[in-house]
Amino acid sequence: MLKAYRLGASLYVPATHQDVLTIANGDKWPALRSVIFCTEDAVADDSLAEGLDNLRQALDQMQATVSALRFVRVRNPGILAWLLTVPGVEKLDGFVLPKLDLNNADDYLRQITNPRHLCMPTLETRDVFETARMIELRDYLLDAGYQHRILALRIGGNDLLAILGIRRPRDRTLYRTPLGHTIAQLVTVFKPFGFQLTAPVFEHLDCTEILKEELSEDIAHGLCGKTAIHPDQVAIIESGFHVSQMELEAARRILSSRQAVFEFDGSMCEVATHRAWATHILERAAAMES
Image (cartoon, rainbow, N blue to C red):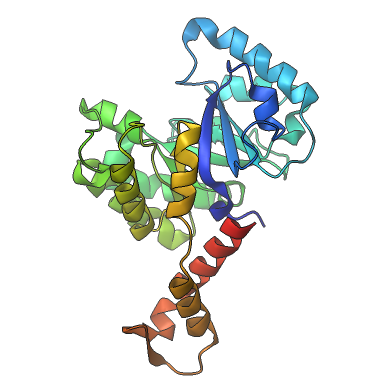
């Protein structure tokens, strides 16, 4: 089963980009773990036809199998319907579904029937700020049987800030804005029910130390990947998700210990309560080494 930890730094690439094919085939930026070709916010309205044609031609020539996971961020359910008819669409690993809520969940998710295709709905509407609405969405996804098609839920940081009329500041992480509370809320609503979540984009390219600080917060909140908007961010994000040898050893001891509680590296390790963390650590380590 494909684990969301394999996403690492997911590079967003506009569908209009001249190198869509070489990126998809791993010839350009071969170190990418995942790439998302965008037909939504990264493509202007008057460039959509060009972007879709570029994507259609690329799908026709894409290699069937490469090391990177390949997704398309569709613009709406209609674009998803079109994309599913394009020859070569079976080469994709799945789709990012923007602004998913209770009103359009079926319009998106009922279309995805190929077992190879997984989806990543993006939480980025006003409903995200209402815990009751997120619980309702979570329960609907579970009751409708959609969970097995969802690789991870993406948190649309910029869209959520836009709803608040705020732009991400340059001098602090997202967790020191109103979205810090929102991200924590999404984690507690969705993760106990088996959903993984990925971290929002960091839009400033020259604030490396703040990006590193935010990555530490992303991991502390249990998020399993982060969107990159420039290739220069990829190595920084990948490094942030790297598992230290001390964490790895602690996880291994927790999962193999016959003691209920023991000390390691100055910390208490309690098998019953730390087992889930240890399992995630091993999964993340395996993903980052692959």
